[in-house]
Amino acid sequence: MECTVNWQGPEGMVFVAETGSGHLAAMDGAPEGGGRNLAPRPMEMLLAGAGGCTAYDVVLILKKGRHKVSGCSVQVTAERAEEHPRVFTRIHFHFRVSGRQLPPDAVERAVALSSEKYCSASAMLGKTAQITCDFALFDNGNSPGG
View 1 (cartoon, one colour):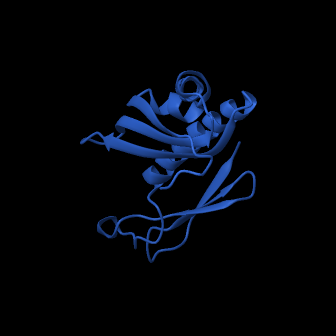
View 2: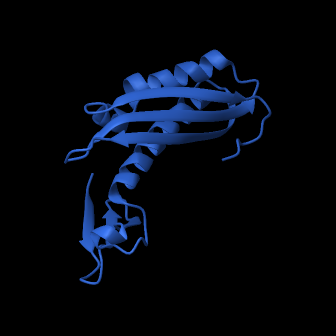
View 3: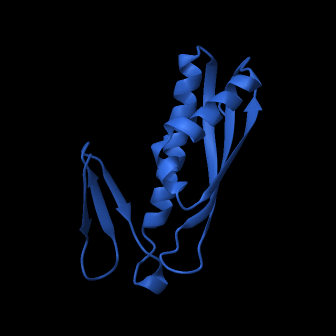
């Protein structure tokens, strides 16, 4: 796996990452740090990546269990250390999962398996952060709202 990150020039703090799979992602800083607030902060991208990693696992586990999952979102909240390097110290994943007749124990198991075994992003972040998870289940067959 690889990624190239390029600074976009001396007029700010915009960086564009090109992933090994050929996709682009922009990042910027806050104005007080020389940025122009044009894109997510790098640490926000890290948190979003962890959310995507664990949500991917949960959906995949439910699908492999032949459950009729129709929606999954995860709200990720985090706290950072006051001192540099300002690592994440607490991260909470709140999943909103919907589907037709999804057993709560299957959703609980999928969330636990992602958290404890499969999500490599959570495993790395868990070296400095206390990670917690919970979920809400919507048995309506519709995708959950934001």
